[in-house]
Length: 346
Image 1 (cartoon, one colour):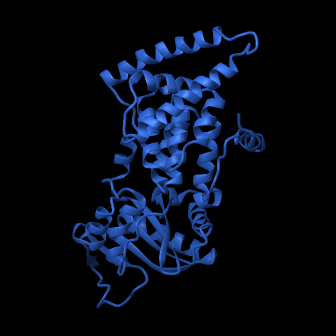
Image 2 (cartoon, one colour; image 1 turned 180 degrees about the vertical axis):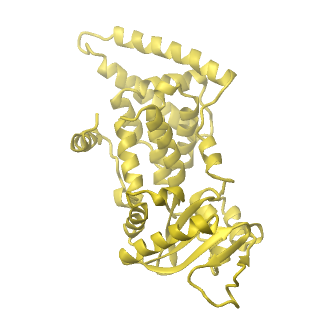
Image 3 (cartoon, helix red, strand yellow; image 1 turned 90 degrees about the horizontal axis):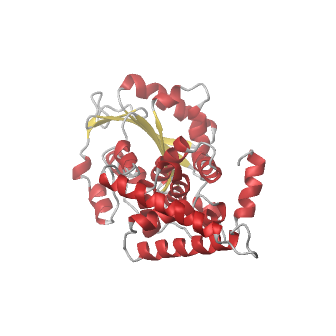
């Protein structure tokens, strides 16, 4: 689910909208229903669901419509990608749910194999029974999106691959570095002074320095060493360090690049915090699909991780980043603890 705070694309026809959707989502959808929401003449939001999900007894069409309505949208277009037997009932369910939520449905399209059909238009002159051809590659919308620096990956699997763990020699190198980092942390806590018996001040100082170095390096387009990734990922397992990093992360490209790199290189038992931080940065940048796949990795390995669960809840409810501008601020951990208590999180 993606707020569209990106360069504007001029959409003047169904073919233009079909060409724009991959850039709104970040990848080319397949076997999906996509809802593109509008306020006035401007596209403000795009949300996608897998076709099988819309047969779920928990009313996913209603949930999707509720998420779109929460964006203060006025109208929407529904696009179904796939064969008619699967797309038509899903599109019908979403159209009904959008109407029940008070949204005007401007059009409903089925898209497959280079052609599209409208469920709204019945005029054979503009909407022939065998569909209308379109060519995304030849579209001015695609050209404008590429010129503006927007990327549309081939499919969602390509997006998942962007957060997949490194393998081979790179994995072995980080594993060795992580063993050294864990010994370094144990030594740091063993050396705590009488005035800091639990090592909290030493831990916070080390964490603050590691986070500051990592953010500075990536904002200068410099990559962390294996040792730096390992040390940072070990420190991020401690809540004060993680919250310190969270309060200093936003939607900058450098922050997304940093937490993607740390997530891919960290050992599996240490990925929860960097995955959640990547999800937060991607969400702030309007890259909801990237945030979703980062949270999938976090929660698959660590299903009870509090920050990942909080962000997953925000994403699923379609909360726009603009509603939480300035959040989190330094010292937000108290707010997070209150949220955890209300939701029964650790």
